[in-house]
Image 1 (cartoon, one colour):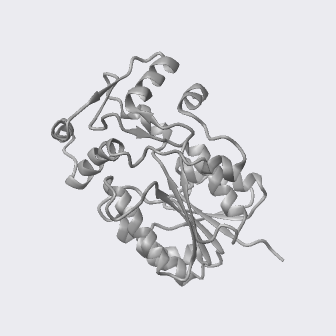
Image 2 (cartoon, one colour):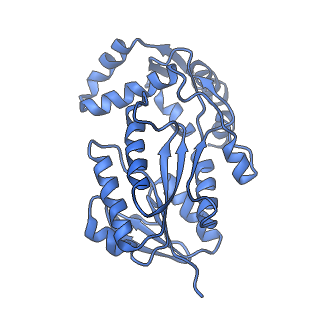
Length: 280
């Protein structure tokens, strides 16, 4: 009897690629569902299909024969929730049995971080389908924190003394691969994934400076200053709101608790910011 097929989306991105490589190393058959097959990694036991989240017909074709689907949340956009819903509905139509979704820490309809509300809406849609589901709610990626600094080395935002328990992409990938390798065991579970530390952005800046030698500091903007300083990018309103609300969520304590879930599930301690920077 052949093993159940796992489909992995986002395999051309950092998280999806790491998950796909881990599954290949475990010798599991998988199908990489990507928008651009030419960019898909070449892995033993993996086949490639083209589909975008918003293309129902292509998604049904790509997912037919799949038992378990790993769904990396789509690129940030005003249409992301609708595209998520169409893709989930296509998975149901294709006969997929379970879906593992990369959500966000503390996803809720009233979350301060606006995109966490989008993740909650996606979760709710999944709950209303016949699919078995698992939600991986990752905190901010540790890899993103150094990128918050501008060219002048200053992290700017209205985060105050709030803390963020960032998690590494590799740790999220390790949990995802584990869940995918154990079909059924994690059905109906919501895993809040964090790193081992809850840091203020001032502490983040100090760690970046200490490890990399790049002078980095934190400037606590007011919300008004944050909106004004980002106006230069001429970004759509929803995106600016997402940028600023990230810091406001930190200030309000919504991203500042560690969970220990990574180590509990994988048996390996989660990577800290200092460890991550030393690996780069």
